[in-house]
Amino acid sequence: MKAELRHPLEKYVRPGTLPHIWCPGCGNGIIMNAFIRALDELKMDLDKLVVVSGIGCMGRIASYLNVDAFHTTHGRAIPLAFGIKVARPDLKVVVISGDGDLFAIGGNHFIHAARRNVDMLVICSNNFNYGMTGGQVGPTTPQGSITTTTPYESIEHPFNLVQLAASVGAIYVARWTAAHPRLLKQSIKKALRKHGFCFIEVISPCPEGFGRRNRKKSPVEFMRWLKEVSVMTKRKDPSEAYIGPDRIVIGEFLEVEGRPEFTDLIWGQVKAVRARAERGEIEIAL
Image 1 (spheres, rainbow, N blue to C red):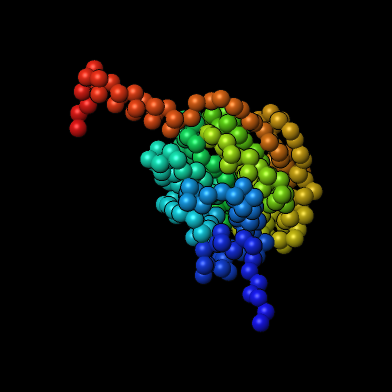
Image 2 (cartoon, rainbow, N blue to C red):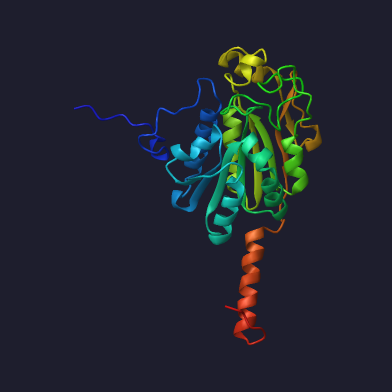
């Protein structure tokens, strides 16, 4: 009797959820693969891990991962993750969502979680458009791109997500593409070991929503373009993290140590107040 062959990473995927609903050529599956391989190589305790996602194509990842996970409303992945971390500081909290969810309706939450240096890892699948709802222009759509809501090309200035994250307080900031899965995996491993707000942007192909309208007619062409235009950097100025038709600057842009983390501060304050109350110095209203 032949032994049953099982995938070595099967335990990280919720039973009965595959095949997934992502389009052929979408980079979200590559991101999920890099994430679970990082978990496996770090031998992460899955009982101490929580994954939170928002609305959008990447938001479905919470349904596939066989860990404690939450699929939140649009733009609210980070505040829910923030609440989990404050209530259970012993847990490692990861937010995985898309550019529209994290930086349009959820943009203010991102800014303040980074400012407070809450211990969480945020992974953004940046596909340059609202892929799930029809391919509309979004906060990261490159200028000159055609979308369903900018048929004569987008005139808006997109966010530089690397510069934004670095400027508001993140302790680790990196950008990769779906064409660099090994580098992405290593970056995720590094970020998971850090204590503070970490951000990884992943340029992810969306052949259906963005690619076919912008001269990338197939998934293969999209991936080939990502490989051809990507330029590696090491500790480059985040303001120079350029994205354009001829060049995408990737790499690690920021890594700092020693910045106080929010949940450490708030629980330290709670313990100090309780100690003062026990000594009779103050009264705590119940």
